[in-house]
Image 1 (cartoon, helix red, strand yellow):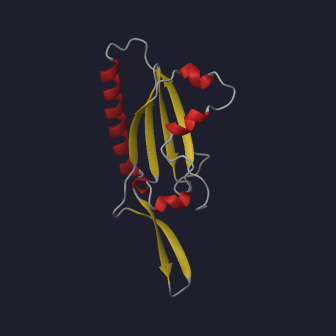
Image 2 (cartoon, helix red, strand yellow):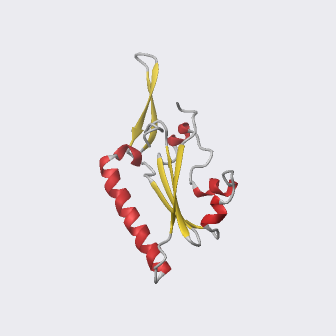
Image 3 (cartoon, rainbow, N blue to C red):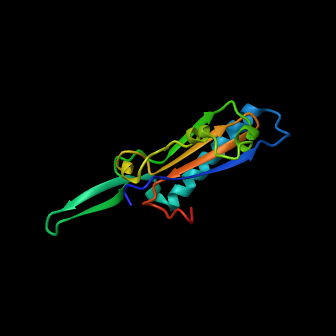
Length: 145
């Protein structure tokens, strides 16, 4: 399981058409998402840790577990892209630029020893918002994520 890639899922939303102040809208949205993430991590605290490995000498084995001490915590990133929703949806293939909408691109689960186990990246588009979520597969099942 440690050499499998992080699970990455994304959500694409259009901006509401009646937004008077786009900067205030984005700032309010980001604040609400950060607050929601903080509340969620209270219930799913392993996502705020990092992986640690403990070697057992009495019975030769290694144990990998979520550790909360000196952890980088869950990541929350805000980015912007000069793209529209139609730029993303117009191709029959997934556009390569979408890889940059996820913080942990090409990361394997073992990297959770030094990287956050959960990373949320909110990318503001010209007419929409993309929320990319990357999480360590050792912490959650990809089919229920």
